[in-house]
Image 1 (tube, one colour):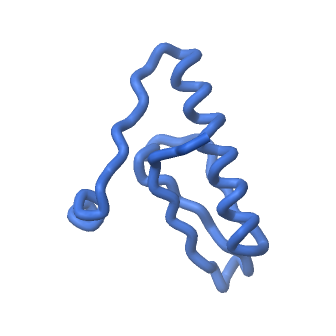
Image 2 (tube, rainbow, N blue to C red):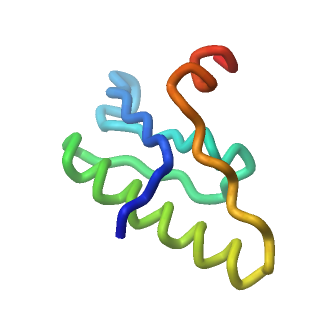
Amino acid sequence: MNLPYTIIIQWSSEDQCYLVHLPEFPTQKYHTHGDTYEEALKNAQEVIEMLIEEYQEDGKPLPSAKSLEQLINVA
């Protein structure tokens, strides 16, 4: 599945794993991580798929994908 959403993966020294943030889903109840970058990315893609399914089941519109410029201006 081609997912047009942003996935931010950052190493956490405190947690000793890669943490995942999904900026287009600010009220996400899902968050994830991985012991490796690849695992974090795979987990993030699975969470996005679950969020999309949840939005569709609830009849909520999907969030718009943001450009890099939009993401930088929000930060």
